[in-house]
Amino acid sequence: GQNIDQPTEMTATEGAIVQINCTYQTSGFNGLFWYQQHAGEAPTFLSYNVLDGLEEKGRFSSFLSRSKGYSYLLLKELQMKDSASYLCAVETGGFKTIFGAGTRLFVKA
Amino acid sequence: DGGITQSPKYLFRKEGQNVTLSCEQNLNHDAMYWYRQDPGQGLRLIYYSQIVNDFQKGDIAEGYSVSREKKESFPLTVTSAQKNPTAFYLCASSARQGADEQYFGPGTRLTVT
Image (cartoon, rainbow over all chains, first blue to last red; front, side, top):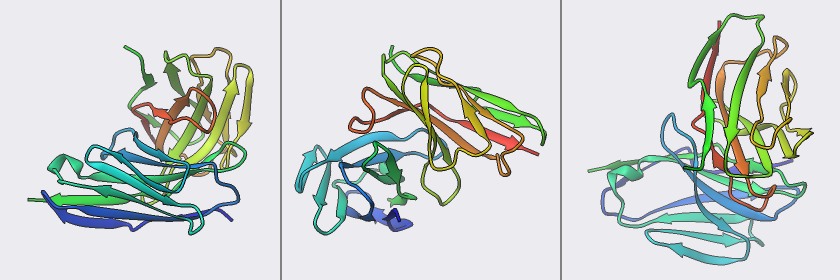
């Protein structure tokens, strides 16, 4: 079967660093996406990992280990506007993208 | 100003009625998708289309239908056969199917009573 697991909720403090983990078991793997979704709004693209390792983009970084079926999204210097859901998604064989349920991040002052 | 639009943002219907959700994109993308999002669940794929006049069922296609007569348009009809139609519906597009990031519309929240 296809399965993507993420923590349901996380809370962190403004200015801190938070790591959101994602584990996946899918029938195929072409790449892994992270999207940000504010409540009631559309998801927006954050990152795409195909190869193992860390991809850094400003305050956001994403890591992938294909052998372990594991990824994380690292958010640095947290701001209040980072309060949102973060969706991990795997592009599987057959050109479908499977989405996890998302991790709701609460940033407190 | 390129983007993907969905209308309306909120839609209310009585049980037993078919309803069509619109999705338009001016990004010149080949691939388009329809997802359904329920509380506490990930986005689930309803239908997707790689090219005009071609579309495939996703994981939860039962009770839904689509058409792709134009590259920029991919309307979704929620039929009376769909047992739990109340949900948040998201349309997306990408330059190529799969490998490229998907651009999402603002979504339509459908309530059926």
